[in-house]
Image (cartoon, rainbow, N blue to C red; front, side, top):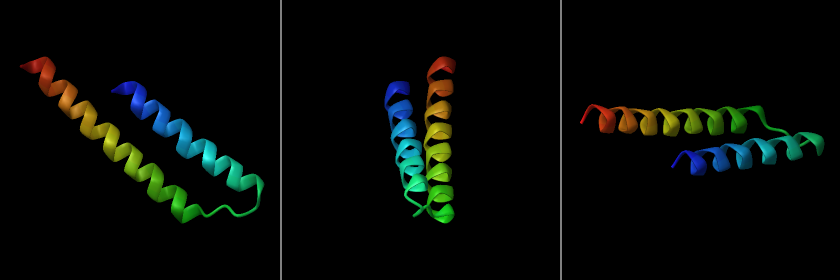
Length: 54
C-alpha cells in the first residue's frame, strides 16, 4: 500500500519536472496534484492507525 503511494508520488513529481524543463509548467495543476496526494496519504494513514487500534 505504501509502495503504491510512493510510486504515485514519483510519477506525479517526475512528470511535473519534465514539464518544467519543457517550459509548460502549470503551478495550479501541480498544487492540485500535491493536495490530492497529501489527501490520499492522510486517508491511508488514518486507516492504518485504525487498524493498529483494532
